[in-house]
Amino acid sequence: MSLTGVTPRTVGEDIQQFRGLQRRVQLKHHSTPSPNTSFCHCRPRVQKTAIYNRSEYPNRLYSILWEHKQTREHDSSCWLGAYKNCRTTLQLRLSLCSLLLKRKFQLSVELCRGFGALSISPTLRTYCVVDNMSPGFILIENFREEHKWEQSFAADHFWKQLLELFQNGEASPYDRRVDGKTLLHVRASLYCIGTF
Image (cartoon, rainbow, N blue to C red; front, side, top):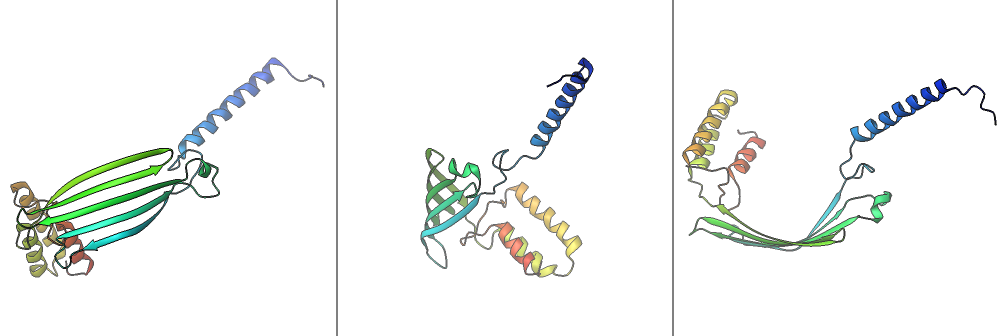
């Protein structure tokens, strides 16, 4: 093996090229992050199964849901699949609607196991329950009846009126009817069927 043609200058050029290549590789590696890690591009897949689901219809005064959810973070072909592939969640959710208190209470307990850990997460949420004659729902119904065909100007006027109701405390974006629908649900359903 001969070292003819190797000079300090060519060694310096090779070192510079190597440093430039190293920088380009690092930039490329950091410019395309994947959702899970920087080594794979797997997308999590979720499979939900309702073990038990019961609601009292039509008023939905109470409901019970027991759900099993399994999340797979990596595909079976991914090399990370052997290390952290599956997370299993069991959730029990109880909902009770009290028309007397004008509140809906939702209690849930979630048990999550996976990736070498176990967690228990209890949650208690309350929502304000209003009837169809509350100011926000009346505004939506009046707007739908009066302005079916004048959408551009009327929509701006509607949003201003709704914002005033929120600011005055007469309505809230979290208000729900007994069936669980919020102002956004009702507004979106009217828009989707083309009458809003």
